[in-house]
Image (tube, helix red, strand yellow):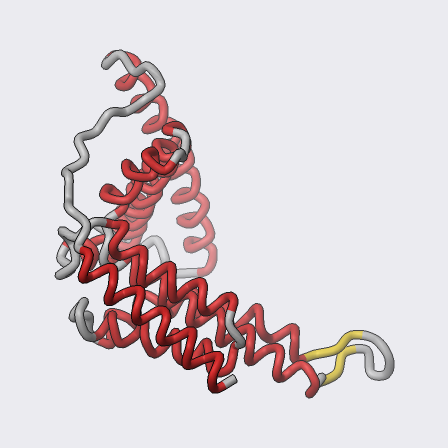
Length: 244
């Protein structure tokens, strides 16, 4: 199981309705996107981080592992705003882009923490079936669930193949490393097609008619939780507009 899925399944908010958890997560996300980046992004990021470390009881190391890979993309996306192309020299430092880069990085980092807040408290199996009640086509949710599941199966397969190759001393030289990587890619490619074929046959034999019916447990919505979440979002928005 992926680390973020494991956190979601063991979260103190695990048995809350996904709609409840969407109020603070998506509400703060909307604040990060719509409000001025300063101090909006800082307040949104601090609020989301406080919820992750407080009510959700995540350790700082767990939060860092969840956000470190996306933060690399945030940094890479901010760097082009710091340079200008054209003139003499062709590529030069652009100090006027520092504010835009900081705003972009701030918004993206705050929005990332909001998404982690929802993902670390809500398993995908709880959220996807309920999307159909909001009008999302069943085919979309089913494809999303299958892709999500198969993605981690392929990652597990890649890890297993790599460990087997390493156990046979396949990464001793550059040449053997290239051969092992090529063999690993071929094995995963063939295995993924074989798994997809067997999955299609299994669904056909079980009378698949275009919809995968699953039992969704009914969970009442906590009005105090929703009210507290809405109050937090409103406080962040109000404080941002006052300080901006």
